[in-house]
Each structure stands twice: as structure tokens, then as C-alpha cells.
Length: 134
Image (tube, rainbow, N blue to C red):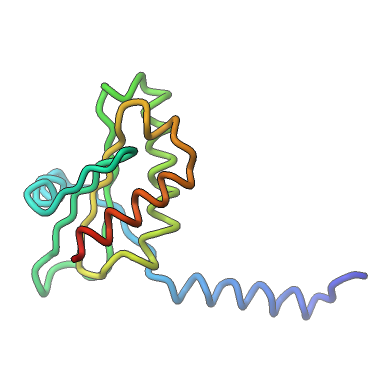
């Protein structure tokens, strides 16, 4: 059984509309934004550390997120791998559970960010967001 071109186009259009409905987070790029988040709320979880800062009304709209891993996490290859996992985590969770007008910085932890199963990272991040927003 083959899918017609019309059915394929409809399915693609539906997927694109679902992506448009989610507010995808933008990346923090300025040091000042990271420092502002560091002064906000913070929460340590077994596999990651999360900092959150609610921006003032009138500042940039949407959800913004930054990622960092210190040299304690490991060499460059290890740090990049940890950041890739954190980026995927934010891509999956923040559009649904993040809040507009907030900046988040997700910090990788030594050993655990890479070694924990991805499902544990997801549950830790969801718990952290719930606690930060309460």
C-alpha cells in the first residue's frame, strides 16, 4: 500500500502546523543574560543544575535558554556531548513546560549529565521546572 502525494502533503502540513504552535526557545548569547539568570532562581537536580530568571515586562518575548558545562564535566568532546543532550532536553520540554518571559540556563554536571539515561534527565528537568515555577 502506497501513500498518495496528496496524503503525504497533508501529513507534512499537519506536522508543520504542530511545530508552529509550540513556542521554540531561542538561545541566550550574551554574558549579561547568563549573569542575570545566575542571580535568579536556581535548583540542583542529580543530573543537572537549572537557573531561571523571569524577565521584566517589555523585554524580549518568548522563552530563552542557555547551556553550559565547565571543564569539570570532562574534555571538549565530553562537554560537547553533554551540551547536545541538554539542547535536546530543552527542545523537547521547554515548549510545553517553559514559561514565556523566562530565561533558563541548564548546567551540565560532572559524570551524571552524560551517564544518566535520557529519561532520567527528562524527569529531573520537569521536576526542576515545576519547583522553579511554584
